[in-house]
Length: 234
Image (cartoon, rainbow, N blue to C red; front, side, top):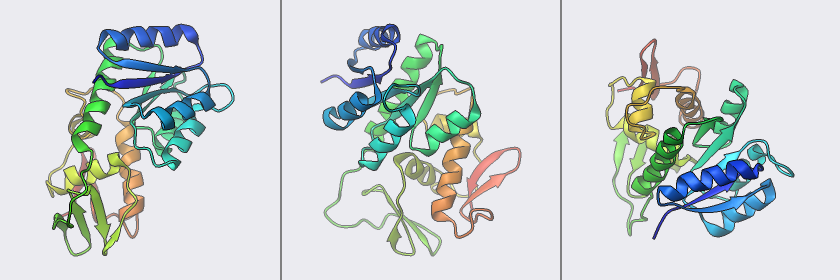
């Protein structure tokens, strides 16, 4: 059964282009021309990925993204925007988007990002175990339960997004090793040979620190190596 991509975009010409590109790659597509319809399809049809424009009638892409996440859906969301403002990118990521593409985009970039985000979700979808697994213990306070795709701090589960879980699991499995933002885009975001905007990494790290650190301003788990990248404190 093929993967389905939901396209939420108010310009029919762009919808037609996106649908054509994705259909050629073997994907099925659903289309919505406004925010409420896109939200309804995202929650009722369970697509494998959502391509979500920011500027939509009736309900903008930010609100659609926020409501999808509030409903508990972890479907990968890739924002589409014609604007270059950093605030738009950061706000989308903070509301739960996994990635963004600036219009106009190249067909190969679009397909690569769709494939990467769908592949990431397929690789990390959790399977509930019959009994709690011992997992990966991180010092005295953190534990990663890989079977349940969950992280516990002082015995209490943390409310992490799939991306945040992927990030801490990757870094914690390699304590002390510094990874550049580009390397994290490649290994955690699944973008092979990534070269480009790495702001998504900084946003994910900041949000993760807010959830796992006692003092996000003085982190002890996810640390920064100035000029180099991030690492998990030993």
